[in-house]
Image 1 (spheres, one colour):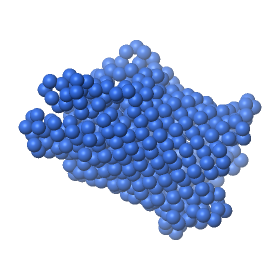
Image 2: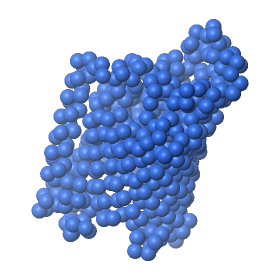
Image 3: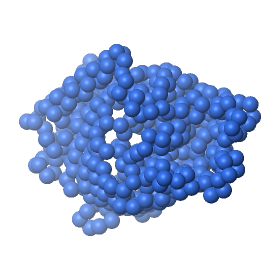
Image 4: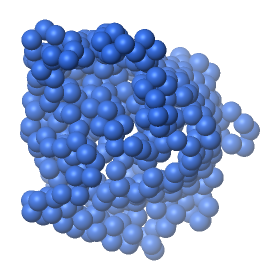
Length: 499
């Protein structure tokens, strides 16, 4: 992708205010100082240790220490139990695992350029139950690391705001989550502290998790408004989370995270600033989020249809900049502008999540026809995405003999702010460019089929269509400021293996 487009897109795609977070030349990504090299070495050591241990003793599925995995095609992990070693480790409180996800995606037309990209992620996880290991009741530890590799089709081919893959990131070997958790009062209260990812627990829709596009995970309506995309894949941050299970149906949780997962600003892309996951920065304020949930008919013998309903809110304490007017009240498109958006203190929004089964399957909540809907709003002056909505439908076990397969259709819509539209219209008028594109929205439509070949292996054909990639911005590959990036069609397949 041309360097000018990288500069233009990154300032908005990650929710950063232009005056504070304007991105520089991507070539600066290779300029590491001594501290960065030390952090990289630390991250590589963690990844290597987890890799060697996990390959020797792959993780038990679902934490079941008593069940010995059966034959090759029936067991839960590809490498099996290693003569019972996995079961013995689990009984001692240690579980280790490796999951490999690889995909090939291509866009035959539309976007900034055409072509295909292969990309992948190898994830390593270590979980320690200190109640089994050291009789510390309710205490667990977790560490995760990742090896990310491949082509980044959204970043290089499409120019869109909602990456078409939820494993897409700058190639790296990085530490991911690292935390300890204490459960109290018969599982009524749990406290988690360490390096956390907000999308592990918050704004989660169970029914949307099957999709490949990133917005169906951590929604663009929040990630697009936070510095460096927020504390989510691939960059968690130091944080703390408290969860309270009030009844079997009602729960509440709240958390605080460091404000910018990339750390102190410099000219590089945020993912290069925290390239190995060991920045552990507390810079740029604090991100708070709280969420209440009501889950009904979750038991297998329930007479009603399963449903989960969530309502949440978030707040960021840092300074954000107005996206239309500078600190002297002039349009940022003006020739006399200072180039510094009018500063405003704080940012926030509210959201909801609905998961509802419509037709139950033989195994109740695990199979059948379900729908999901998520949405959120936030202030338009300091956010690029003041309104967001996604939803869809999925059917697990649609075909006889394929009870583990899932067919799903999802649509995600991100409306860009009126402030950005006002800035674009000023640019039109001031420069005498009446046909210059004005940013408005981006929409993604995805159809996917996840086929469970074995309990440890899935294959997933996937088709996506992106309308107004980048929100209707000029196409840097068109040689003209008046031609927007064209709607694009993406197709491909993903495979995932649990070792």
